[in-house]
Image (cartoon, rainbow, N blue to C red; front, top):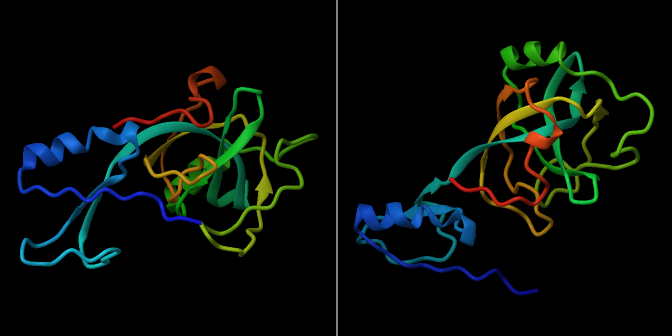
Length: 181
């Protein structure tokens, strides 16, 4: 297995850095910052990061916790064949969000697209989450960074922005759709 290609251009010009942030469609996740006197060190954790973030929509397909008291939301989007594909999970929800979602979420009844599926606690984790499947009708707007894994899922947890009961399936981008800032 080879590591992904990493481009490490540098600049001290804010306009150039700003222009680079428009390259999300080419796979740019964000920018790293370091002091001019620091040498380059691959994988340096002391550097500052700025990640490109956008808001977008997804369906709630499952929750950790219960539909009456969700702790996190497991999100999906439909692919070109009409299959609901898992695309990511939220960070733990604030109490105000939990209370607002309690009335909007309904337990799954009958056949669910994710029946029998297991979900892990995080990227690269083997810890299996305990989830409750919900009726995948509720659309939520989430704040995501543009990083994705090899399967097209959001690589990092997302932040719930708000519920969108005014939207329908045709308003939600399909699974794998490019996001731009």
